[in-house]
Image (cartoon, one colour):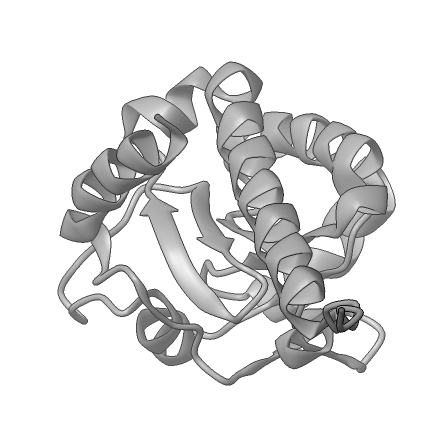
Amino acid sequence: MFKRSLAFLCVAAAAYGIVPRPLADIQIPTPDSKKINLRQYRGKVVLIALISTTCGDCIKSVGMLNSLQQDFGKRGFQVVAAAIEDNAAYAIGSFVARYRPSFPVGYLDRETAIKFLDISPTTRPFVPIMMFVDGRGTVRLQYFGNDTITKQGDKAIRPVVNGLIRQAEIERGAKKAEAKPEPAKAEP
């Protein structure tokens, strides 16, 4: 049932960037002049939120994303956010200070955001954009701010996160079972 639901969600998300696809290899600059290297989260399910610092829905999403990070972080989940509006590099510092996200937040310029989202340069996406990445670094789902799942917020996003984490746990369990040597059989 989960796999069928996930397959449906993947088809619905395909209009907004090809999924599944490998996560673009970029680093997200932060207000303190460091960089978020997304490869450091390999093995975890990652929700990347692309936001605008002046968007009401994006500001509201910080609380939901904080809650998701707290509830699922110990199960191999990580939230990362990046502001993508013009002048994001200047606006993100005060945004972080004011809303205090419990997850890493940085910014991307327009060209990098387009590459990251795998969209046409003429596309003007609604924010917040939610990108769901599995533990292997594959973008599984991508939703723009005007999509139903994004508008429904926690009620719709929490089951997607939980499902991706459960899938990762099943895959890890299968790998452990394969690596476990079979006990030697006694010969008669």
